[in-house]
Image (cartoon, rainbow, N blue to C red; front, side, top):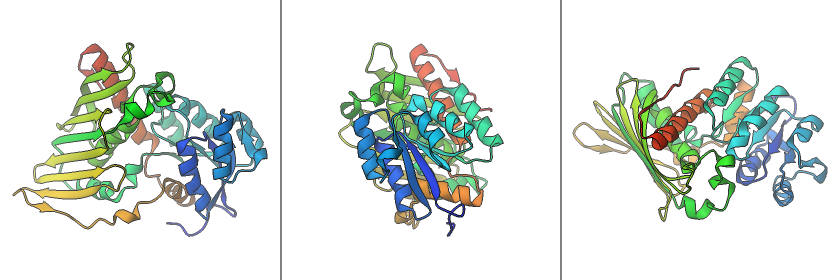
Length: 341
């Protein structure tokens, strides 16, 4: 962690979207001594007022129109916490104004747009970070080291997340594909897909998928079963079930020497277990209380010039696989996944 702020004064952050992400991640910027929230934009008056009070934003700096906020306020960075399909517009508008951006997941719901943001991020001086928090979770970070720093390669992965997603969100924008881009695979499921790709370092090449949809247009999935092939020869089974009574998550990744199990309930910190080749379980020490905040990691990346924990390139791979999975489910075909930029 850097001890000082990224500049002579606190990082000045504007928040686009006053919903859950805007309030919770925005509050991280409020509580971090290196930053302050100076402005807020949301099209909904009630959301704007509630978020404004939560983030201590003065009434004169609460905007209905995000572009007006970007043009009127002196800012260094923007937090984008709007519905998924709006991310590209809001991120590009901020980058056009030379602002650092922390964008909630998924980065976009369109592969071409995600690719464009990777190219822009690679060429820009500004930080573009995506809100995939498993990159900050100590259990996932430690598990990733098994393959990132060793000579082992995962061979077989199973991953699953359950949630009472549809009953909770069927009347919200999360179940409106014009705003969400799809169903739960693009919402909570996006974290699971990212967790598999980032932790293992595997490169997806093709996917078959079976989905149950809540709508006739086959856009809002409530059950998704993905069978993913990887360039390294591995396979993965990824399952997202949206009509369960509670949240459970697991990622089980096997290689020739054993396995890594990442498991957890609800939104508690995940647990890490190593499975040895003789079937012995080893539970390494993981300080689950040391999970960093998204805002803190974002400020660190700006201050040090380091690569942020979750990059546009990471998010591009998730979008590419997710879009291919929806196509595979609708067509019944095996669909190639192209993660080249």
